[in-house]
Image 1 (cartoon, each protein chain N blue to C red):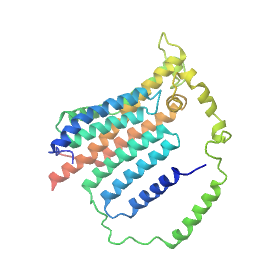
Image 2 (image 1 turned 45 degrees about the horizontal axis):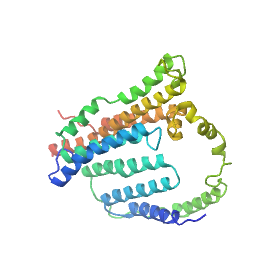
Image 3 (image 1 turned 45 degrees about the vertical axis):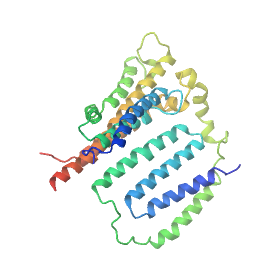
Image 4 (image 1 turned 180 degrees about the vertical axis):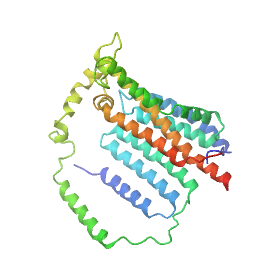
Length: 176
Length: 150
């Protein structure tokens, strides 16, 4: 397996994520975060998850950036903290250890695209084999989201609706 | 931020072309979601993005913004459409959101499920679009009132 495309993308992801944290000007941080979302969308597309890449590009790089910029327009556009406190010593020691532990655990994960992986042998074959005959929907992602697992999607839609209502309740001002 | 229309001719011309194009592409993504990548969520966000773009460029009194404001009155209609499809399946004698039991005459089970997927996707798109535009209105309205207070 070659990593000619994977490694530069991963480097760009880490670079943009770190840059968004380090940079002082918040507007720059927001734009760097948009670039991060775009690179993440490229990663999804490269992994074959076109639907997820689409959502990541539209929501992460587009809508979230607009929300952040609108928020910044009424708060300070700059990080006004004079000095960032250094991280606590326990975090400096514990977080790399946690990362090592996760890397160690990642050894036991099935290989990418392994047909014998537990996720690929449970209900996925049924969806892939029957989606077209059951629902006349060639895109299996859509038929899983909107038919086989539609109750989950309903609750997600309720979450989106609630977020709009909550923003209106929290941010409204009495104009009278 | 949204109550000031942009003065630049380039931005206004580009926006007047782009808003309708983005909306057209959003409709394509919505109705093509069963054959390719895309679907209700992305289509809703794209419709919202086109309206927000119009809001930012043309200000709050333009036609696009009037459309967005009128859209806000339909808060919850998308969710209602989603749940109504589920209720229709209950009336037909099936489980909640089991599209194959929806009482639509002249269609077999697969066609009913196809139609059910399409209707719920339209519901999701409407819900997401309204929620996104309403968040932008909430965020920028408070700016406007704050500026008049000061």
